[in-house]
Image (cartoon, rainbow, N blue to C red; front, side):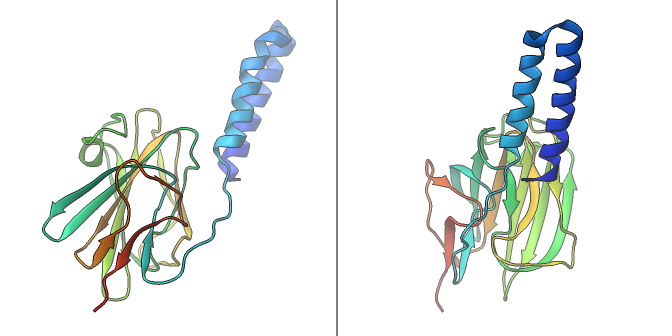
Length: 201
């Protein structure tokens, strides 16, 4: 479990205990329920990472878009609801070239405009002769994106690199050297679902 979940659970649990003591047990129940949900929300299960020249999903959720941003760039967007695991993982192995934070709006993360208008981190990973970028995008409820890494750090495919809190979106940006393996509507899991494979040659 992500340590943040324990902090949230302890805070809501303590608030529930105080309300129950002052106003009666029934009034403390909603806060106890929120504390339990925090423990569930911040879970961080182990994942089996596939081998080979692949890009894996950085997030759990549903693929909501596979779009050409240009002749050389394809965007895959994954929407996370509040019941999905929100720990983010590196789509490829390599060196973190850039982490760029951008202030923005808090639109519903499943909307197309969220990719360009919402608050987000852009993380660029430099692999073996190519780059893959992805965005941690805040949503209507999620108002904080967290990245554990900094430029210069090396990461492995599927390694934990960050967190988005309470409903959000992750975009992956892939160049022309990739064969896309997913389509809108598919469910994916961070670190284990293959989004694309490197083209041979």
